[in-house]
Image (cartoon, rainbow, N blue to C red):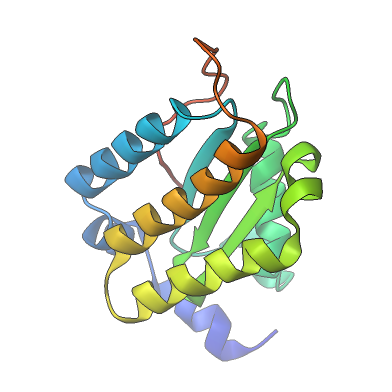
Length: 165
């Protein structure tokens, strides 16, 4: 556990997340998720966490491990077709992680998810947070449409509203 990482996480607080993701940006992300989910039976969740604190921080929890915890806490695994996808951003580490349920993950695979994360991180480095998230949603959507296309009305199993932790 490095002092640099601890300092960065302790200094990055919720107002900095709101500066990067103000209400109108979160509303646009929610609209992108709603539009996406009309095209497939999968479920997409976007969660941004400004920084780790407490036990996750002092245990030096990696962004991937935290994303898996969030996937579980948000019950994204609890979809009828095992096709829930979490797009998780740990802002303090500038790290994007995608955690996908087993139904979609088996069809898409780690390399494709990592490609989406890398493209999003590139947008974020350039300061294009809204565009980066929406680009990521669109890329995830293409995989969900290919493997779980919508055929008529279907239940929205998870909230579309982005979560700020």
